[in-house]
Image (cartoon, rainbow, N blue to C red; front, side):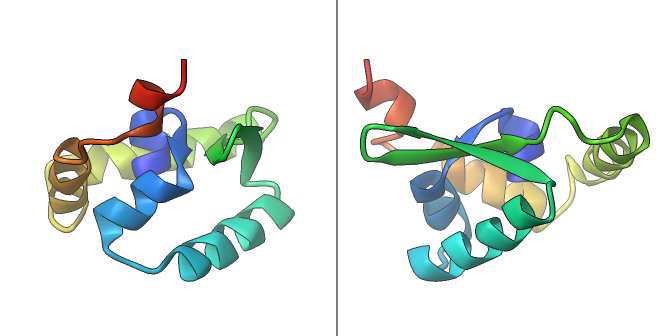
Length: 95
């Protein structure tokens, strides 16, 4: 849901928001990438992920529908608040 909400997000941001180790986050993202759910891009040291733009329309609609239902609910809202407190987000440090 963080990926959907942010549009694109760095592994370090997900790690910070969820308070989960980087290897665990990366493992899950690799599975999602292999399944074609997300795509990645590297920017310097940062790996960014977004929902794969070539997902079928129905898949994107399901993700959006779930996101819209969860946006104000915990734990997603807690994760989003945690992310907003992150001081060193990559987009602020990478020109």
